[in-house]
Image (tube, rainbow, N blue to C red; front, side):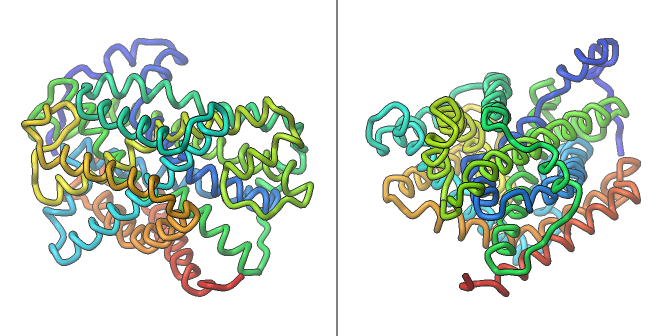
Length: 433
């Protein structure tokens, strides 16, 4: 593989530790934070309310899995100069590529629709106005943002939106959690062999290791290089040691941050809702309403407003990754820095995806049903996609010296096995209470 050194990391190498760490934060942080979308927050809220602290250990074991998998995605984008879907198009038969692409896009749009409805419900709880007005506002704002602003402008805003996730960390301290008990459950696995616990655990796994993140991470790495002036695939192909190190630092930070937030959401709902027997919640909005009499108005507002911030962060990733999958699968021009007229297929897919997501919100489709079907599709599709991803990242002919290490391959295939078991369990426990 050709190694390209454009001086990208020169300033970062010379900067002192903390400054360098902040400077390299970018695609990995954004990808990790977008994993804690309103749907994910709902899933973690349900986990804490129904099962207390007993699922905290899942947060710990999925952290290295996420770091390894997203690191593979980043290296594929950096070393090959193109996104994950483009690599799939070049190396997989079309009969496999297109069904996987359709399934990922379908799950993403369902998820985005549920997220839009969750954001609108949260905004209505705090500021009034009907839900449909908030859906129009949020959907229209995000469309304008992605179509008419440059990648760097989008990146700058989204990077700061990650701060909205601190609302859930603060909330956990407001409710006075039992930290010793929580930390014990974090490191000591506990399993309840009943269908409710198993199904909820699979939902936690499914919302944590999600297919859209694979495509989003690789495409963001490519967008980063385009923003640096590397406009051709030849210019982007390859990577320096410093670039790879910076990418992994960014990704590790993003994945740890994502799972730390998940930890605090489970802790918050466990010490309030579960401890008071309020286990029958179905969404983050239910959790927020139940929190107010138990933890006060401040905790309620933090939990609710956090949903709006995380939705603004996550929906562009969901709809954007769908547009990338469609464009790369059909070899259309694509990129957030391209004007609309130069990438009509890419932006058409983005616009259609957002409109369908808004329609799901307008139609008041049961968000829990939308999340369930999204989780089912993601759970099934994640397994072959993970296998393809680990295979690509381990292929010396494709990745050259940046092929995955033995340890990364072991973690990668272990993730395939865990997600395979999760997919099987979805059907084993289907319809059981």
